[in-house]
Length: 256
Ligand code: NI
Image (cartoon, rainbow, N blue to C red; front, side, top):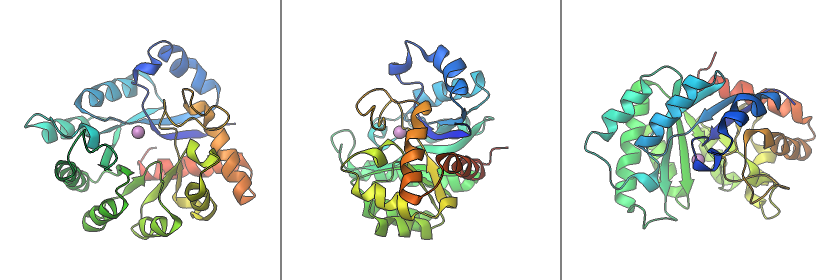
């Protein structure tokens, strides 16, 4: 397989400390991985994400504050995020959004405030956003309707009805390992119906490894398993899915 583009990864995660250089320097390119967008989640990972983009030609980065990390931020956090986004190869604001599953990590009101400010920043800089929505579909949609950013709903877990609203806003849908899970009714329905020019593939690695690797460490070389599943659902060749989703990612992130 070739033209594998991973639109959402966390290669600065400590789960890659044991073999990061080997994996990113040789393993992934040899497996046909042609592009990766690494996500930040807090200010420290804006830095580590940027470092990855400097080390590997096929890496790009996103800078932003994840909803779980939004509680204790320095006063100038938004200016710091903006600073990272001004650097070359930083192509998106992410990952940002709402997560009502972990309200202990950060209260709703604070999550919404930080999400809204980053949506404004993205629009100001004409950058796409990478949106995390966990158990917050209605509020996420309301923010997207209000701010109308370009971007992608990553690891999309909503119904096809919700997906249609996302698509109507001009946004992309990101799908990963979850489409291969046995209980994946919603993602499968979305994978069957999403217009192909609005689909991105992703790992969210080290998490969300596709079957038969479920529960183990994920990496971008496993994306063909997701392409195979989507190809099977749509009666298409998996390589064709990889080719199209790479083009989509390059278009959304304004990459070469
Ligand atoms: Ni993520």
